[in-house]
Image 1 (cartoon, helix red, strand yellow):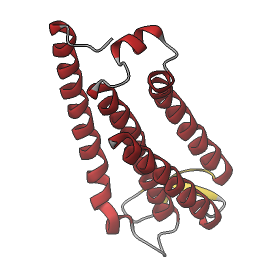
Image 2 (cartoon, rainbow, N blue to C red):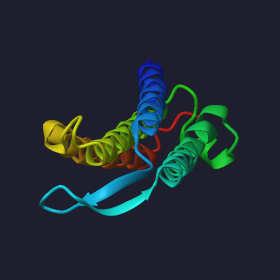
Image 3 (cartoon, helix red, strand yellow):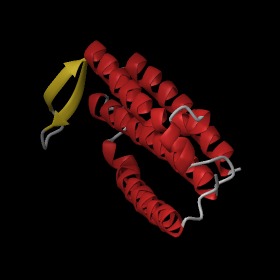
Image 4 (cartoon, rainbow, N blue to C red):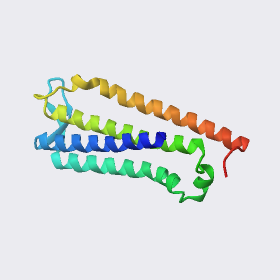
Length: 167
């Protein structure tokens, strides 16, 4: 049940990321600024196209690397994962939910980063301090999700140790 909600969140985060990336790409000047000095003048810049393709590459790499374990569990391809997370095991649904929601959080964090680059490059439109709340929210969410992962793994290890795994 929770896996469906996590998948919806995951796909919505992909849509949000793609929308923001395309919006920012269209609004960027020829060079994207990623470091400014105290006066707001650009110190370090990268070309608009390099920023776009680098961001897309980063997005694809971490999405593919993190979705593979979820698909291995869902499709029951790997025998050891099939034994560890059999259909009907409550930890199977919890782990799948965790994976999909964590990737969604990473997608949202990357979207915030893209929007931050937009705010640095186009300082006359929006200042980066207007949405600094999101810069603190993304690492806090990632920390909470990693702690939840340790909690889930501890519960799964306890289940394996006691021999209560479904066959």
